[in-house]
Image 1: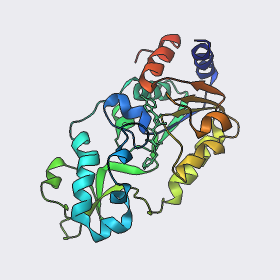
Image 2: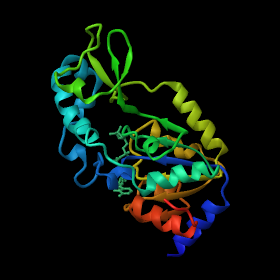
Image 3: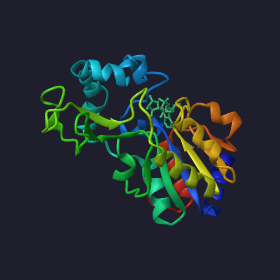
Image 4: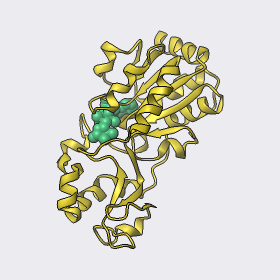
Length: 245
Ligand code: APR
């Protein structure tokens, strides 16, 4: 448990924390990961998230995307202790913000305000024709593919494979990371570029990683590896930090 004692001390001492999160932080909220045991890509073909396929076969793509993401999202998953710890650290003025690869909106639901949704969000749809963005409502998926008032096909407003990521999110993330004195890497394999390069931008920060399994960061970047589930680790840390989650 020495590592948890040290991790809690590092968090207590830090004043400019940045969190970089992936699918693993939402597992204890009932949302599956992409990779690893039981991950979505072991059960579905990632091609459904390729931009070209979506343009060619919007209905077929949407049928799988609905199953992959929206059937879970419409059950309104709740944030877990890990999301709440990050929101609490922000409220305490210790956390600059969360850079998340997740599209589930759980950081905001937990109360985080400074969130960079690096891969966009499933909570908004965007029209391929007129580019209008609309908040997602479950009734929109009664007919697939969902269509905009202009008749265009609506796409989830998250990044597909082969889709460019606007420079603004990258630049804002790098600015946060350059300022950070502590980086928390939670629940990510670090396999998907360019997001996976972000932790290396944190030049001055000490790095705590929380994951039940080691990742590519564990050797190269992490200073303190907490081999644990995010929610469980958050509760243990909160206890030491006298934070109520
Ligand atoms: N707590 C913390 N981490 C966990 C937990 C848990 N309870 N359960 C699993 N993990 C870890 C796994 O060990 C793994 O390292 O979460 C990580 C999930 O990895 P991925 O499924 O690859 O998710 P992520 O790294 O976020 O994927 C990045 O890939 O498909 C794209 O756009 C998609 O944003 C996603 C990107």
